[in-house]
Length: 222
Image (tube, rainbow, N blue to C red; front, top):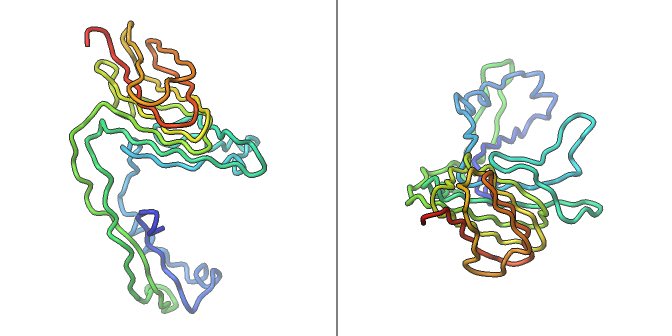
């Protein structure tokens, strides 16, 4: 988890198993760690692994969405398919937070009927730096055949030129759902042109091949 840059605390209780933890029944440190934190439902950077093998349509659990990404489908539907999407919206004006690096300590859990020594490892984030907001979105797709972006939640605007960069290891269909003025045009700035594209007043859909391309959506009178 430290190598992935995640925030976490991991306690290893050297003298206990899961039954000991259950009978001791002291989870206050977990509650203290979470505190009053609330999830940021619209972060500037989203990285997500799509794993349809873990879905259960019978139970109504289909993990094909994350934050402002939805409709995620893997391209390869083989024996154990997974895909990864990495999406960054520059419109937030915020860089990625810098991980503090892994740290370690030792302690004793008290407050119940046992004294439970533990080793703790963890990582925090340093405050994210501010950047100049840009009306731009970058997507990196690995074995992802379809993805939809909620442009408004990603803080994108259709009222000014929008830069869209797509880097994919194979064919993919990308939709950016965003109100666009009538007459908005799509041009290819760099890389291969889309295999097909559709621009409407509710967004843009592009079918792309493998490779990296940058496109520009330009509203009228710009």
